Every structure is written in structure tokens, then in C-alpha cells.
Length: 122
Image 1 (cartoon, rainbow, N blue to C red):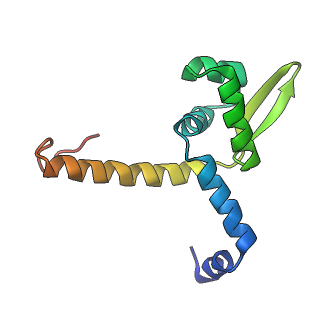
Image 2 (cartoon, rainbow, N blue to C red):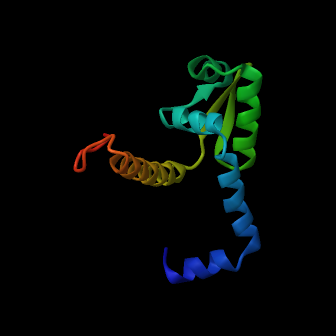
């Protein structure tokens, strides 16, 4: 992030609130699972519920949170609501965070002697 963008972010309460809203929306495991599923392509609520093994009302609630945060959007096909990811940059962020978590887990497992040094969990 360049210096001008960093200053803009640090001094803009509305922008910071939007960023915080996205992080809050992603703070639930089921919402993360929904986002990861939507990375593969758009999907109806019923299909998301079936594929993720989560009750449909719960999926609808999670999709509402994700939509309010601007992470997903919906289009309608007859009676079906089809959801899709609005911003692919969220997946870049997830990759960075997941990579960091995996590195930390690997270091912890090496420290506990569960994985030989030089070996990878991948």
C-alpha cells in the first residue's frame, strides 16, 4: 500500500468502518465457508445449504451479513436467489491470512516435535 493510500485509510473513519465491517463479516467459520464456496462460482441458497451441510435459514442469515458488508450480491432467477462474490480481492486476503496461519501452525508443530524441521504440512 502506497503512502497516500495509507494516510487516506488512517484518517478516514468511514473507510475504516467499511474495512472493519468486512472483517466482522468474515469472523464466522460458516461465512468463510460460504465465501470459499462462492469462489468456485455463483450458487443458490438451497444448494449452499446442501453443499455445506448447514440449515437453509442459517445460510440465509449468513448471506445477509455478507451482503450488508458488500462481500456478496444476489440476482434472481424466477423464485431462486443466486448469490455471488462481489469482490475477488477478498480471496487474496484469505490466502495471505491462511498462509500465515499455516506457517504458524507448522512452526508450532515443529517445536512440539510433531513435524521434522524442513518438512512442510502441504
